[in-house]
Length: 185
Image 1 (cartoon, rainbow, N blue to C red):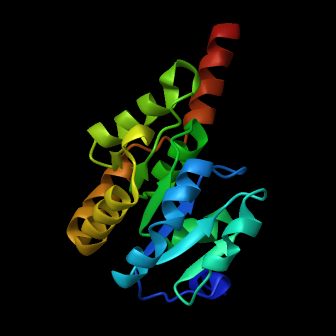
Image 2: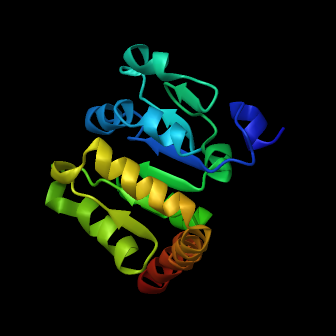
């Protein structure tokens, strides 16, 4: 089964994956609620993970072009279907997106310790793999304008994807383990 079949979405349409971590994100879900119809009008389909606690108030936004789920168990398939990801910028998320070579529209969690999500997002943005918007500046018009602009520009998405992939460190665990063993030896 393909990723498009798994989520019952069109494999020919551009897909925006939206998630705010396993618990969801109230601010990201709010802006998506106010943007999803406009995104659909641009021909963009949405795979939207709401988080379990917010799902019941959002599931009514499901449509032919939008899949609303409380949680996505198979993120590999979700990533495989996606052309762009709208999400927070936690370390694991950033690492997964780089490994998959996915471009991102990051909204870093403003209250993250040491502003680490902003720092994570900035690395990707500075390399041309992502765009970043501070939560205080996020609005439905910002989301719709930026996402539709990116989705219309296949060359830019491809370049962002390539740059994202170039930041991946798939052998990081092995390299760290080797350094630890050298130091311990």
